[in-house]
Amino acid sequence: MFNPKDVKNAPFWWDEAPRPVREPASVPKETDIAVIGSGFTGLSAALTAARAGRQVTVFEAQEPGHGASSRNGGGVGATPFKIKYSEAEAKLGRDAAVRLYKEGIASVTHLEHLIESEQIRCHYKRSGRFTGIHRADAEPGLRKEVELLQDRLGLDVRMIARADQQAHIGSDFYLGGRFSAHDGVVHPGLLHQGLLERVEAAGVAVLGHTPVLNVQREGAALTLQTPRGSVKANKLVVGTNGYTGGAIPWLERRFIPVTSNIIATQELDPALVRRLVPKDNMIIDTKRTVHYYRASPDGKRILMGGRPAMREAHWSVSARMLYDFMGKVWPELSGVGITHAWGGRLGFTFDKLPHIGEHDGIHYAGGYLGSGVAMSNYLGHKMALQAMGEPAGETALDNRSFPTMPFYSGNPWFLTGVAAYYRFRDRFG
Image (cartoon, rainbow, N blue to C red; front, side, top):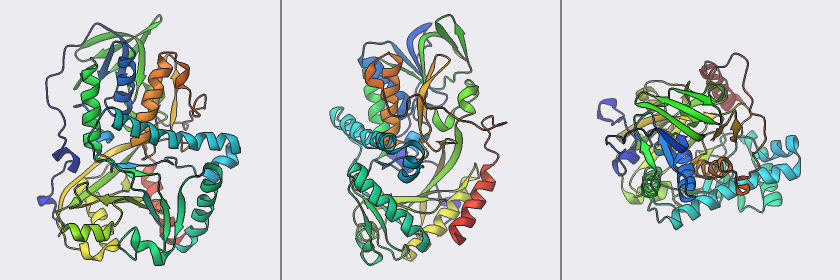
């Protein structure tokens, strides 16, 4: 049974990879490259710059990795865009759409190389992803995307008939679906911990509990104001995504913080978990109010995530909604205990694309739309290269306008209505 009193309001990942608790080092008077945000984006940028011989300082408002990098579901996707391939081709043209989607594939290749070359033990496996069809009218669109991804990119994606879906999910809840073999799963807490260790070993100072309150330009340099002192930086890169605050209003107006939540069951019979998730892959669905779920790396739990409210709500409310949905997918899990429930903020954008670029001397990357494990590491690396003036920093996302909405200042007041509309469309089409 679901009883909030028995649930730990903290990420399951933190049991094996607790957030570091330590006194931050003193704030330097100056640094070559300042990084705001200690998640995957910021740490990847810091590692790239430090390995290139730059003096790098990372600023984090909470403990390192407090945000989405250690809170997400651990899915690794090769097509990490909310804009469908068919939409991208219609808007951008075939060549540009192919280049865009190849960045998604490149992000997975980059992550796999990072994990292997840095010897980060984080339970990564390319086990694939099953996308379940929640309504019959969603099948034609999904089939069209599969055909395009096969033809344009040569991706190993294929439709799965309902009669065959038990090989991918031990449930009759969906009407068949799609299997994407290029995707995978990872323990995000251990991935972040390993990356943090490599960054600090490279000589980077990671300053937890040191928020940047203000940024001012002084000639060619930038001055960052923190509660613990000010720092002059030659370059500034920002990787705060859904946690972007008021220190950089231009960015805050372009990222939409969307709340996502996850629950973890009590330990179950491993044989049951294997039957429910036979390929140990990530599972999502075609709903607009998407759910994402998987087995834990040790094969003893089910982790169920989604964005039931989209805005901040008490964790127990969202956990209850996820618990009820889990019972619909797998009736045999109705009544099992929940040990962990938590949430975090994702970074969405108005054009449904990630962004990387430079504005007024500030380099940024973010807007991963809930699919950022690979893309954040990739764009963090590319952002550092761009800040250092390296041609290898070029991406298909460069030189794109970064839209916002009139009167939007970072408070997503409209998400409650969006969530209600999405639930209506999921139910009635």
